[in-house]
Image (cartoon, rainbow, N blue to C red; front, side):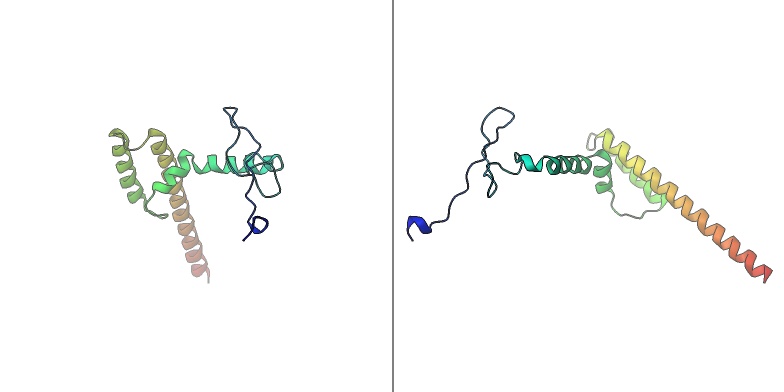
Length: 132
């Protein structure tokens, strides 16, 4: 294989870091910039940063800590007791516990609403049965 047949190496990005030094990443094919410094991707990069921020929120982290998507109110109460204990000993950040409590509260409210809806449907069905 001669020099002409050798694969062409990508150029270094022309962007600069926050420290003012030249970016060390490889430039995208056909561009002088890496994906982070490419001016044509400013909007796309902003959306990626927003998505990353949402994924790292306390609420998102708390949801990842839940052992199962569906729990009874008793299970929620028990699990929040464990979370509380872990906050006290420093194993879980208070913000994560607050988010877990918020998620648990919403789950409990949904559970109560579903139960009420089922009871209403049962009462309406019984009323219709008695009318017939």
